[in-house]
Amino acid sequence: MHDLLFENQPRLDSGHLVRYSEELGLDTVRFVRELEEGVYRERVREDFMSGVRSGVNGTPAFFINGVRYDGSWDLAPLVDALEEESVAATAR
Image (cartoon, rainbow, N blue to C red):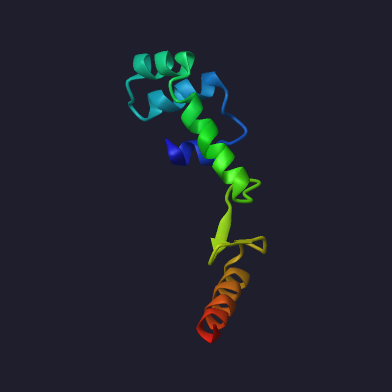
């Protein structure tokens, strides 16, 4: 489900969520009931607020040694940033 939600971020309305549960072979009756009852609403809110407090303003969010990385997600710049932090951490 995680992968489907991430890949379909613009389509997270109830109808789509139910279709995703069907695709995955989940217990759709239970899924719909828990969705309607808001069983996990508080847990989702807690996770969201934790991200906000940590400086996450979207997904994906990536941190290198506790500092949010805002650079390119292309491989070369990301590897460069990791290597730079590795050198800096070694020098500390």
